[in-house]
Length: 224
View 1: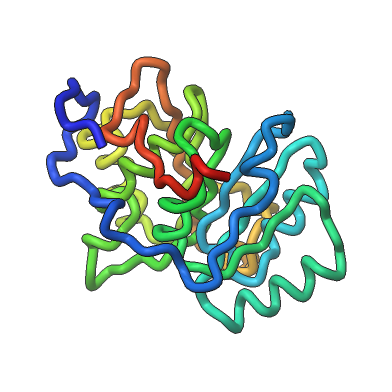
View 2: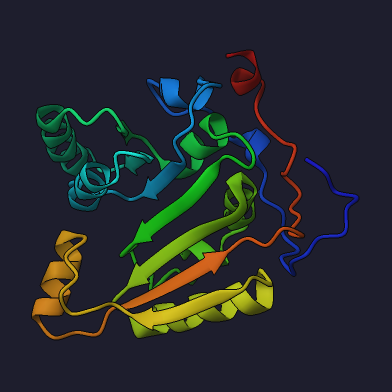
């Protein structure tokens, strides 16, 4: 981790990846270590039962998606469908997304990160994604010009995320309403059917952006 750099954000509290152990039964998909891979690499955090991941992979054969889900029953449902569809450009991972990302994803390697309808953590706002120091580490894994897509039906969550993106992370972002015809996740289908407004925030990483973790990776990645 590099401390003596001019950061381009205002997050003072630093994430400490060196303190995180690898998840149980940790595996790294071959796609990450394949130097010949030419498909843009995507990451979905909190894939649920896999509705978005399966649809995205089927519709985008020129991209590779790694989709992570922590909850066992949701992951088992997702994994069963992924096995049936046998999509070569999709890896379903059962793990905690933070620990797995730290141990598996190289710096500057992700073209896009999806965070679709995360737990709003209304009683513990420090656990909202853009409030966490980990978000800086996540940005270090994003390529220049890469994009974070955050979607929620909680307006206060979106208000905070938009504020944090601009004021803390100093990143360009665009907020929009999700079209009523969108059906990316089971939550999205349910919320829009109830005529709730769903919000999407698109955050992009500029060329000049710097984090403490741009050159940081665990030795396990380097050795593979």
